[in-house]
Image (cartoon, rainbow, N blue to C red; front, side):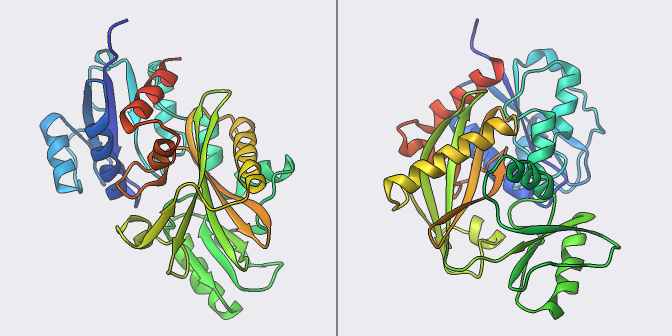
Length: 322
């Protein structure tokens, strides 16, 4: 077979639109295969060809030109790389469209994408399988809030990424405002107990049914929590790869990440995030389309394992074709 041709889809309607475009710049710079770009604007319409690259240079696309489905010659592409963070991209929606087209694509399928996007449902599956998660409760918009543990705790939209819509609550009096912020992004919120003395660990997984784990990395920062600005502003966070851990803890984190990856049915790639608190490891969340920005952990984790950025992208395309 000749070298595959790739269609990269970036942007999207979610609040992570700009992050997706930043990720796309990195992927286009390092992709070893011929790649074309499509950008979904914030209004849900698509930009193709030079208009897509203009949006990439502008780092934002408020309005698009083509309604869905876009007028693309899908047969031109061997693989689609949906690099869409958050809702309408990381949640199984674009994956379902590509399944209908019968087009191979990078990353998790419909069910795994939807499950991992929902912080409540994924925690239920993980907890049932014996994987330790932080105590939590799910609350729906319009119902009377009840939290069975004391503050401090974190209030999050159930279906967003990049710490969007998250508030740390120190007193019950702050709960209503925090829930209102979460419900701006989703009809379901997750309230998670805050842990003390937390270290944040991340591990990358690459593969289909049988994935391979990267070294474990650690994120350190001065902010109250790992918020949007801290994640994507260079210099705000320090990434330690490998994380300064004893061999037993590193092995535990990698084993739990691989177990979760297989359990949730993920394919291609994922970044699995953990908390380490008072010697105990807790799985925080699983990201099926991790970031590829200059500050993103996923490509750096595999670079530490000896896999260059272009070779990582080559592997992802090959896994999609497989």
